[in-house]
Image 1 (tube, helix red, strand yellow):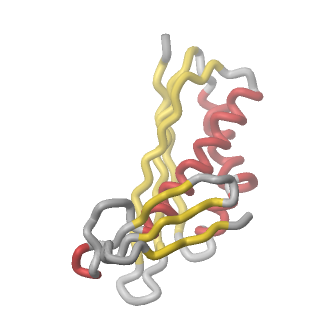
Image 2: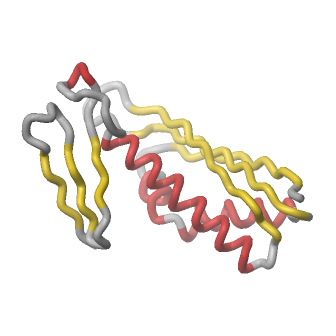
Length: 141
């Protein structure tokens, strides 16, 4: 896996990231650090990437279990250390999974498998942060 990150000269603290798979993402900093708040901060990208990683796993696991999953949302709330390096110290994942006749045990197992075995991002972040999760199941149509 490769990527390049380029500072956008003249744009404060904005950066253009190019992934090895050919996609681009803009990142920016907070105004108090010279940014203009025009895009997500780099640490927000770490958090949202982790959410995407685990949501991907949960949906894939549920589909393979032949569950009728229709939606999967994950909300993440993180706390960071007060001093540099300001690593994440606590992250809570709240999964809201919608589907028809979803089995709670299967949904819980999918979330647990993601956190324990498959989601590289959350497993990596667990080296510095306490990870917790909750699950909400909503009946679908």
